[in-house]
Structures are given as structure tokens and as C-alpha cells.
Length: 253
Image (cartoon, rainbow, N blue to C red; front, side, top):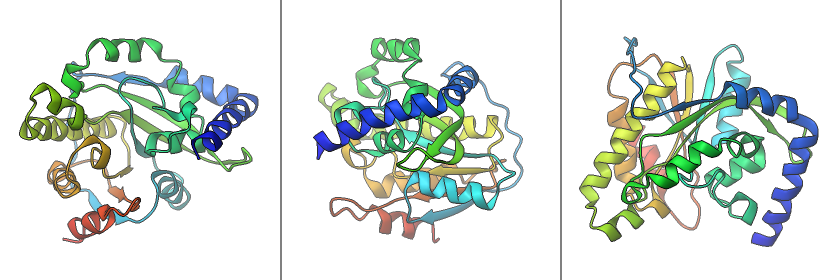
């Protein structure tokens, strides 16, 4: 399987370069790096509508763009903090890698070498730091490279608790860090005047956090007024997980 996805990644990379190099360059030029030094002005006076959606991040975002074509739509890329695209070129298929297969996201973020260089020098016991890339108008395509739509993408890594605990980082501290980073992502979306935001089980599973706690922390983050109209939590169960049911229950309250 990994071999097949490696071949597909190489083919997709060539296709994106051939068809969308101009789009890629524009997105690179307009990308913005956010960090812990950024301050945010809160202007929202209403509460975001929170929904569970049983779709992938990209499919949910594309559906929103079709429905609300005049609005700003963004999705969260569950990023690898240290490497652009994670193990996309090696055939891995986590959320970030799948996004790279569906778009020119890898071609955009892989050029931001200083961003990843800094990250590799500031691992912070694998809790990482509040760092993100905001990339506008990322091109999403069919397998044959035909344009489906453009979506804005927030690339940000959750704390990696499975690795952090090897440095005696408590689960409570890791959860506090994750919740703070959720507010960071929310602040970025508000700063960019996003109308519809696509999130999910960020940090659950391989990164070591409980799906139930991730869902509750997201719910808490959006218990405050926001300029974002709607947040869709997109979760698909894989490998026998019950993440979808957990998120469905949390956001049906």
C-alpha cells in the first residue's frame, strides 16, 4: 500500500507542477506564518454554529464552498510540526498526507523551509509551539488533476503526547497545551475573517489524546462569541475507532 501511495504522490507532485504552478506561487506569496507573538482582536458577538459531519476534511470544505461560494472557507491541516506534508512522499496516509494527495498543499508548504527549520530547533519536548501557516486558495483537484475548488488551509500541529510523555510531560499539561493551541487556531480563523471552518479529531489517535476530551476541548473553545458563522467537525472512523460517534454525540448537545 505504501508503495502505491508513494508512486501516486510522485505523480501528483508532477501534475500539480505542470497544471497549477502559477496558483501555487500565488498561494506561497500570500501565505502567512502565525506564532506565539501574534496578538488577536476579538470582534465576534455571536456564537458559531457547531456541526458534526461524517466526511473527510476536503470533501466537507468543498461542499461548503459550493453551498456558500461567496464566503471564506478554511480547513485545518493536522500538520506534522517537523516536516512539510508529514510522510506524504513516503506513502503515508494520515489526514495531512491525504490533503496533499488532493491538492497543491505540499507544493506550497514545502517551500517554507525557514518555518520548518525553526520548528526543528524548538521541539519543546514534542509539545511543540503555537506556530501555523495560513495558505489561501489552495487548489483541490480530482485524481486526474481537474480543478474542483480552492480552499484556504491552516497548517498547524497538535502536541504529540505519545512522545512528550517520554520526557515526563503529564497528560494534564499536554491537554492544556492542546486546548491553548485550539484557541490559537480559532484566533487565526477569526483574524482571516473565515465564515465557515472545518476542524476534526485533531490530536486524537496517534498523537495520544482521548477523542472524547478532544471533542470537549473544541466545544469549550467555541463556547465564546466568534465571528465564525459555522464550524464543521469532520470525522470518519478508521481502523475500528469510534471517533465519529464521539464527535456526533458531543456536537448534538
